[in-house]
Image (cartoon, rainbow, N blue to C red; front, side, top):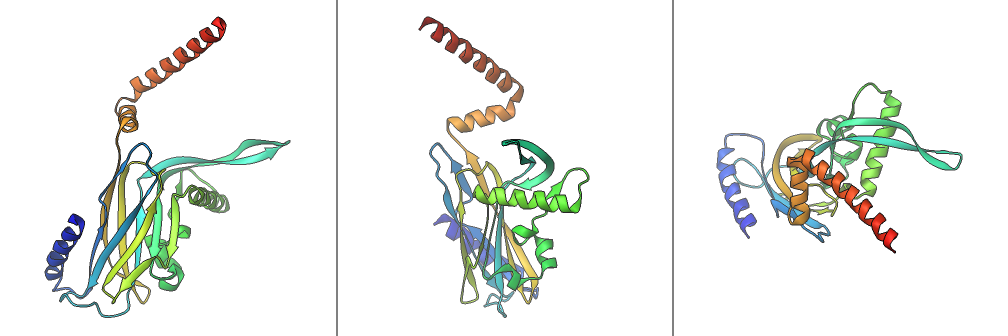
Length: 255
């Protein structure tokens, strides 16, 4: 209810402010601005919705397509390939990426290839094939393409990357909505939902909303301590491991 009221107030403010412009006004919102990860969290559905109006406050002229993209916090990762050697899987080549979205989900009113050309898709990262994944150091283009494809495939199988073409519903050319699943294995942080209004292959306007994913409970406190006092947390983890090993050995000795 509060989200809907906030959306209506934003709509009333945004339309008069843009009345002098020629491009349509895009007013987005999300059903939840805060998602809490607790023990037993099994995932959630995030509703992204909004309105597309002309500067005068009426229905925007033209048949617009809507694309929404939700991205999670970027993180550095190292990707390793596995190679079978005499029946044993071992680590082979690897490459590091300095900034990879921890989560990426896209929904569009039509297939992206029918909405924009490849150049526009690459500029705005509209779709999994157009994610800008930047490896560190020098790497051959063919090798980079292989690792990037493997990374996207891995994240898709983990449920962290997804693309829902036709997942945006547009009503009367004004209101739109899309529902994106949030899996249970997302990481805490700031998630950015960006909405694009597109006509004739051109992005005419865009707007963003934010979603904060936080971890609460015992696991949340442990994660906070591990981040804020990593050195002492590491010492505690090592000490606990040594103690558990000693206690197990003593137990088996007594038995």
